[in-house]
Amino acid sequence: MAKILKSGFDQGQIKAADQKVRQTVTDILADVEARGDEAARELSEHFDNWSPDSFRMTEDEIADAIAKVDERDLEDIRYAQSQIRYFAEQQKACLKDLEVETQPGVILGHRNIPVSAVGCYIPGGKYPMIASAHMSVLTAKVAGVKRVVAAAPPFEGLPHPAIVAAMHYAGADEILVLGGVQAMAAMALGTESIEPVDMLVGPGNMFVAEAKRQLFGQVGIDLLAGPTETMVIADDSVDAELCAIDLLGQAEHGPTSPAVLITDSETLANEVLAAVEEQLKVLPTAEVAAQAWRDYGQVIVCRDRDEMLEQAEELAFEHVQVMTREPDFFADNLNSYGALFVGPRTNVAFGDKVIGTNHTLPTRRAGRYTGGLWVGKFIKTHTYQRITTDEASARVGAVASRLCMLEGFRGHAEQANARVRRYGNRDVEPYTAAPRDTD
Image 1 (cartoon, rainbow, N blue to C red):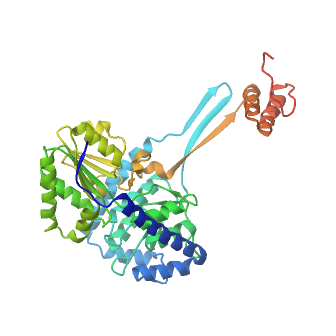
Image 2 (image 1 turned 45 degrees about the vertical axis):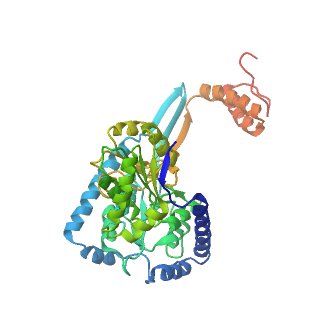
């Protein structure tokens, strides 16, 4: 049985905190739905001290913001976007329309159709999440979304120049300087000045994630992403310092970001616990990372790699970094996670910022049933059918009639019977089952 060397909050404490978040979000959504721009403005003033004449940036404001970004930083943004665009284009190429004749005269098919309007949330309160613009806006445009609205909170009292640049270069059609639940509500429900979208995407804190959960149904969502989670699966082939750096590198996201080490070496586990404390002495973001590690950090010691796999599957974390002698064992056998980082040469930061895979990923065990954001999330697969001969209509109709009657749907059966009579020239009593050829 796995040995827990360090644990964080218990589930009871986490559930109590979740309930407070749910009520706060419910109240904000109701307020924006009822009062529109007025509510969004009051909330923005309260949470971000931000109340401009318009939340939507003009072309001149966008240009002025981009002009503040160093050209070398713009080059890095363009490089990252080129990697993400290329991978998204390759993924899209895997999605094919289909049309097939399943039997003589019966044509079935599907079309892949982009969502019409998408709202992309780019976090920017504690840290300006520039990369989230690439991951959401750019991927949506590769998918073919016609209207992409990008929203991010102000940073230190102004639109963050690099976030604006990333949104613009990614292809955003509208840029809003508006954050938090009020941004999600405005994009999903619409206000006097903001047209509603059909889908919300992007990561965020627990309040943003809860807003997406509550808005789902009124709009589509990509997935419930946030707060970020990281897991390091390691054996004694890797050193404690690297493990500690990778754990804290994600714990700095926020005070509720879980970071977990799973290992089959108790020696390594204890060394990592010590290395984390050493790293916290020099990490510039230690105040946040230390709280996350204290409250949500875990160290789990397993008897062997099979138990390590079992523990990893059970937790189903967002980010899974594998640093073992045989990393392919986990790459081949893990099924529940957000994204996998195989071997010590790569790490979560590469995926978060530049390498090309998307960083909006399932959290809170959602990796059991969904993957992360990708170009396919913005594309709806719609089926169609066509019958081209009288014979096929009558043949399918007769079977459909009998199956409808088997379920008690007499109106359904009559839809089928009408085709049997009209195209098959057969007598069928209304609201009865069509006879078989052998009857």
